[in-house]
Image (cartoon, rainbow, N blue to C red; front, side, top):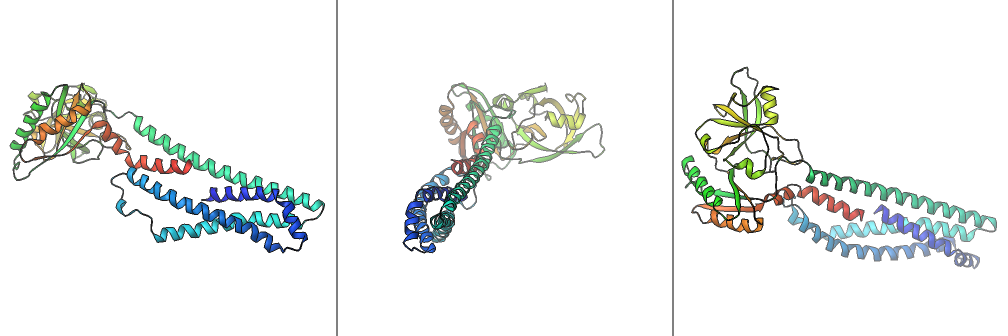
Length: 392
């Protein structure tokens, strides 16, 4: 708004310089100073009203565009609209800005018109200085706005292209809800997961299929405490717990740092895979594979160390994590991931069909992992869109 008012004032100042002769004639014929000022002010008010009306029209169109691009979790999004209070405020600000933008050019025009001889030249030079000041303020304001816009856009790009610790291409995910009364015990849930995974692996083009506990990039869902079994000194660390099936790490492209990932033979073995940061927290520089830890109410053998990943959030550093075989305690939260050699668009429909035809099972979300990564920064993308619009 400040930039628009400065721009209008500068344009009117330039017009005032070209209308000095007309103003001088009016002053010579006896026009009062306030009439010269009012002439410039009235013209400015007319321009302001026209610009304000155009601005309201752009606001209606722009608001609809912003609502379509706003993140789903934006609070009270359905209540965002233009109403009479907004329009009244906009009209008041428009009038005030028009008066403020027209006052200085009007005063300079009246001063120049009433000047005599060399004083007129001095007034002209003063007007040029005022225009230079206004241009300087415009450039300053524009530079600040564009710098902030550029920095926010750069932050978003850095967020999207930073090392995630997992691969999102060619991966599809499905969120499933189970009827609690039907899948009351862990054995029934385990049977369902095994059956679904077997069918998913038989789908054409599927390279890997796995079960996991929580949707990626939606925060931590299960926090647990873990400590070394050989040093029961109460020095526990809090970790984010993930229950997964074999092939989970391969399907999501997570790197193995040491040891091995889960295999079917670990179904009944109390074992755990640590993230690199958790392995360092527990064992320092010592070898972690083969050691024992206490956690989840039992003693667990470390079979592998996985590279750190930003699977809970792209906006934060990787959290300490442990991975358990889902058969040790099958959770209600049910997610499936498939890595395919074909187009993911073809896989999504097949996944939904394979899972959804089972009784008492509801597929609530099917999407690509790329889409999930994009959705996780929806708020940042929206903020960048808004600021870029103002910058433009």
